Length: 263
Image 1: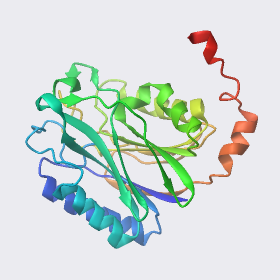
Image 2 (image 1 turned 90 degrees about the vertical axis):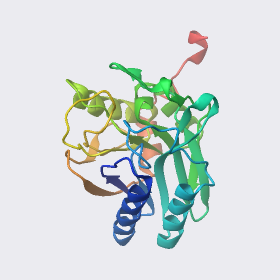
Image 3 (image 1 turned 120 degrees about the vertical axis):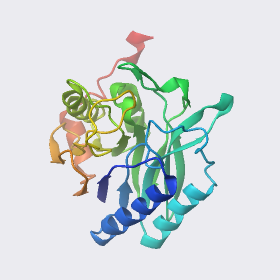
Image 4 (image 1 turned 180 degrees about the vertical axis):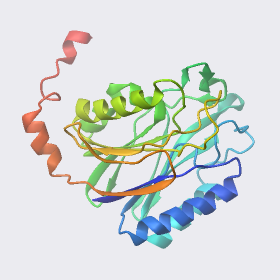
């Protein structure tokens, strides 16, 4: 399966960001990608008041993504914000395209490094996998990468890969953590891990997570197969789904689990 990771930088204007989604999706489709993955907060960057911008999954921004996906014959995965209770929003991944329509609300909220995502965002409560051309793909968002259970749940649901969308916060040691965690989660679950973050906007660390770039594709054995730097760039990669069962025969971490010990 050929996928594309769209490492770009969004601003506070959803309409302008939707035009970027269209531009990058067309570039990915021209390169033969079947799935095009955009970062968390593709609809509007963090640091923007989110509640006034949030739209339902049948709203104009999501419908715009659907039109782009169907016009290009791709499945597009993009981060947006949908209304939630109590004046908060859900940090949502929309996955849409021919034969695919699903969403995932980020489960683990970024209450860390001096930032409280839970002040404005409500946590999701369930996992999501989608099927594209017979290949099952799990969805995850940013801070989720620190929690192995989600990625193992994708594997248990039959996923060959997890698509991870992020707006990773900058700061001392944060790039190293990102690179380590992405590799670890691929190896924990023996899945392909396609991790796309917002490109580095060049503004330096701040209270709201923006992006550091360094998107990457990691194989089910934990090895980095493709990697980007900090700047905006499109990464196109072919995932060999047959590699997943081959790795699982050698690295039997899923089969060797003993969940009863931890109950």
